[in-house]
Length: 311
Image (tube, rainbow, N blue to C red; front, side, top):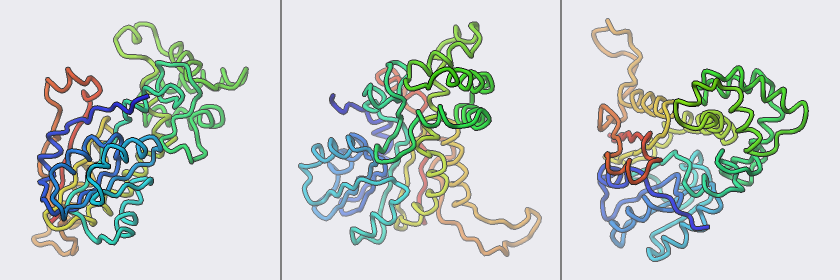
């Protein structure tokens, strides 16, 4: 199957990176190299591009697609949480731009055996890195009802989380839940009919929640944004595309803290905490896809781009 993933907010990301011909740029979620190819095409002979992805298929495809750019490109199979070490191991101290596209790629969703989608009946997997042990099947069959409830409520923001968790536990006592089809059916009968008629697949939120848990997506994002900001040269920019409110909240909070880290009480006449701003949020509000992009690529509808510039 072809790795077909339309890069969301491509023009907006490239514009906001302020690419310099001799700059160094890192894509921490390389995917099919859509953003990466656009960056590489703007670099001169002294420019460098580093692509990082934990997905084996993404590494294979992006290596082929970026081959024409030769030695200016380095591709590493890793999680972006290890970006600082990856960059330093290549002999580079600081970079001029970083991009993260936190969405699941169309390829991952459409590859049946990966188990990301409720649209196909497939093994419950959902791993972005197939080297890790934790799978969706383990989460669904071994987590307690309370743990499942909290994951579906917090990561899926599903108001029927309690009912879904209860029905998962009841179902798995009869037989293990091994496929996406089984899970989707359980979620479906856990949600009132009138809600299901309001649009969207009833299992969407639960599948999102379990995928986030399997891949530790929010934990990784929360603990690494600050380190990635520090990896930037003065004037360097950090572009992050999120696809749901939990991710966006983490990014907004981290960027705000980096911009205004002062912890002094509001009534203090001068700052005495000693925390210094590391830059600024380029846009007060997130950048959203155009109507045209949303029509051409429905998966872009929930995308939000936030940009931070290092001092």
